[in-house]
Picture 1: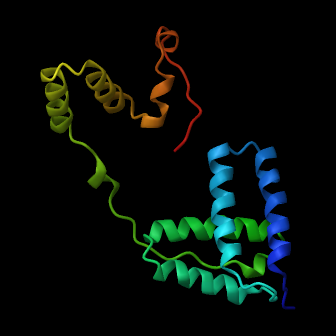
Picture 2 (picture 1 turned 45 degrees about the horizontal axis):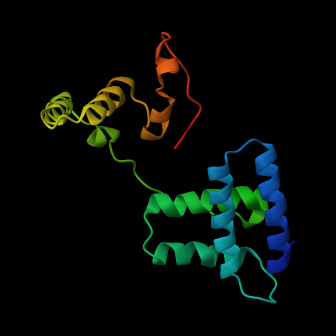
Length: 165
C-alpha cells in the first residue's frame, strides 16, 4: 500500500515530533537542528501535491548534488529517517550513503605538537591558552566542556560533564 501525505500534514507532525523530542530531554541545540533539517526537507516539497517516498529519494539526491560532505548528507538522512519512523512512514526511509571511515589517528595531535604548542603559549605569556591546551590534551574533553572547569569543580578529585558536541 502506497502511503501519501501532504506538505501541511508533515508541518503539523513536525511540531509534535519536536515536542516529543523535548519531552525525551533532547537538548535545545539538538531539537533546533532536528527542526531546521526536517523543515528544509518539508520546504523542498511541492505545494498542493501528495507526498510519497519518491520525494524523499529526490531530496536525498538534491543533498548529494548540493556538494555537502557525505557525513552531512548522512546526518540529514538520519534525522529525516527518525522523523519518518515517528510519523509511521518507515517505508519512506532512505539509505545513507556508504562511506569508508578514515583512520581516526589522522586527527590526533602528537605529544611533540602539544609540547610545542605549550612552549609557544608560554613564550607569548598566554596563560589561559596554555591551560586550555594542557587540559584538553591531558583529559580528552571537548572544547564545549571547558566551562565545567571551575574552581569549585577542580577542587575535588574528579567531576562529570553532561555535554556533547
